[in-house]
Image (tube, rainbow, N blue to C red):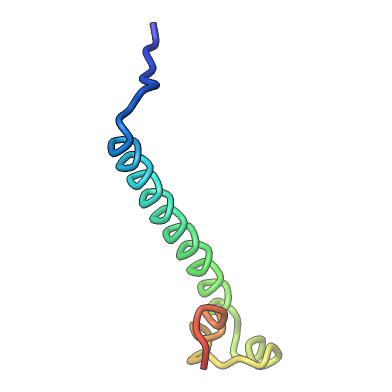
Length: 72
């Protein structure tokens, strides 16, 4: 038999919401980092000639992958 709790005090409900909010934000950061790591690995696996055709050099791969996260 399953039990559910449907009534919480407002401060308890807020704390539960805040917990799941922080948990979700952490998961988002983790997934974003994994996706970018895969992109960096794929670019690093290319030859220098292939990178040059893309207008990249090895020392600029990370900056290229994270270009949307900072403003210069």
